[in-house]
Image 1 (cartoon, rainbow, N blue to C red):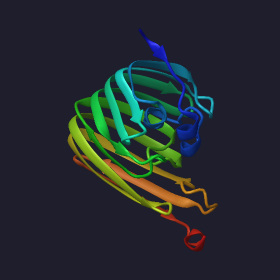
Image 2 (cartoon, rainbow, N blue to C red):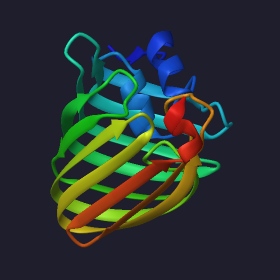
Image 3 (cartoon, rainbow, N blue to C red):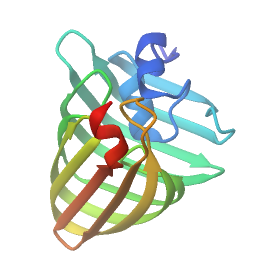
Length: 192
């Protein structure tokens, strides 16, 4: 049976969105379940729809999984993706993560960036596989990823992932096989 679900209130609050600003945030907010389907609007008013054979996060183990998934979003963030498998681990707030991805394809452009910042982004890719890791320390973070296939992306934006009131400036770029990202907190936040 198809199960309609809402994000866990605790995880949604930690992520800062009632209904994630993009597909990755919604996966983080959804308790792990088989035969997942969801549709609705994000906090920013974007429309989304998605389905997967397996999708979500197991809070007890921090495991994220998405298998046989397809999703689309329209509004401030335009996004269409299909994936055979994504698997990894993420902290409760989603700021520290390691992900492995099987064959997938996507295209996106808009204002809700993959690093959680708000700004501008564009991305396109068709991959046989990828691996990516992000480490975060008091709001500043670094991301490094490797892709087997074609991928190109960029994003710039601002966020406050640690909630201390200090802005974090973010940039992310990917070309060919390599993706790098960096968010640096304004020095005012270093002493908070």
